[in-house]
Image (cartoon, rainbow, N blue to C red; front, side, top):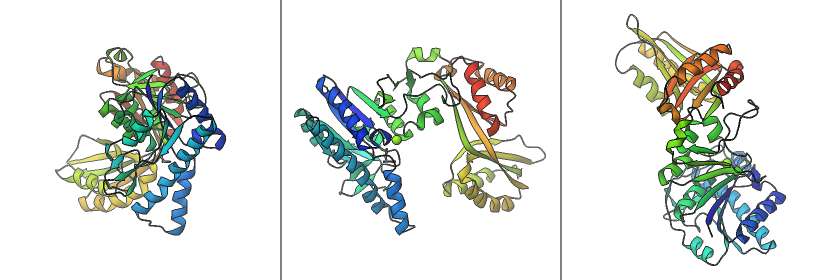
Amino acid sequence: MSLIVQKYGGTSVGTPERILNVARRVAKNHSEGNGLVIVVSAMSGVTDNLIKLAKEISTEPTAREMDVLLATGEQVTIALLAIALEKLGVPAVSFTGAQAGIVTDGVHTKARIKNIAPKMVKSALADNKVVIVAGFQGQTADGHVTTLGRGGSDLTAIAMAAAVKADLCQIFTDVDGVYTADPRMVPNASKIAELSYDEMLEMASLGSKVMQARSVEFAKKFKVVFEVRSSFNDNPGTIVKEETSNMEAVVVRGVSLEKNQAKVTIGGVPDKPGVAVRIFSALAAAAVNIDMIVQNVSAAGVTDISFTLNRDELPTARKTVEPIVRDIGATGFTAQEGIAKISVVGIGMRSHSGVAASLFEALAAAGVNIQMISTSEIKISVIVDEKEAPQGVKAAHDKFGL
Ligand code: ASP
Ligand code: MG
């Protein structure tokens, strides 16, 4: 008998029929003699609707009350799933995050888990019950309801798996696993059988669309092995775990694409200490998330600084940086939308050379112009024109034999 934590996301529990489907899958696993902790999200669209409701009443609801409101979404699903299991004759009990012993800090709407004391969970498991836990929520030490940030049910599942020392943690979602590229763009993309935590984290568009990044970081820290798989079929998914030496044999694991990017260039920046900090601390204070930063070699005492960011944050960035541009005596602020970031990711890059050259060769052959380049130990990213991005992704995918 194994102890398994399973998490079902919003689409997997989106309708009563789908909840019954989940119940049938859980019932089967239970009849095979496994101990089961099932973490569920709110039914799809519910959390968004709750946010909309609050916004219709006030433009500035307090974070505390938003948590009380949003936590109701998952509470609906746990009860419905328990009812579905009862109907199938499977003993089950539903718990809120607080009842499951999830204690968080007091940062409402993005609380961090401090510890888990799953007393009720353990005793229900000992009674052979399927335990159903509301994802995305917890409680502070003094009893206030909190939530863990959007997509936080993934975190609940990973943390529960660590707390009960589960043999297996399965994240059921609406995709089959993590692919070598987006299959809608690259028809011959294939499912990745095994992936390291770091690769999962770096594959922004492939990995974190599937799972909340924080939950992957948590899994890495507590060495929770998990599988991402579909709740709509029985195909094996993608296993995410600590890297093993044979993982390094594959140089590039996948090609990921982030659209909706923008590039800002500040021209004629005086080349002296304290300038970069002015620009980027102001952006940080305005909560603008900066991705790549490139500074040119200076000529005649001035230089250019370019950075990329999410396109939605461009207006804020403009408002924040333009006054500083004038202040420091730089000559201009230019913004360019319509760009995208292509990344090739793989821990094998640490021990193989020539990956950058191969990528650039592939892009050149496909006629894709590179506007910016950045690298990390296990990733090479390039900024390209958004219109050329699909060709670029395909070319990279072919080049590395994925
Ligand atoms: N219901 C929450 C959300 O939509 C948490 C989750 O689904 O993981 O963000
Ligand atoms: Mg999700």
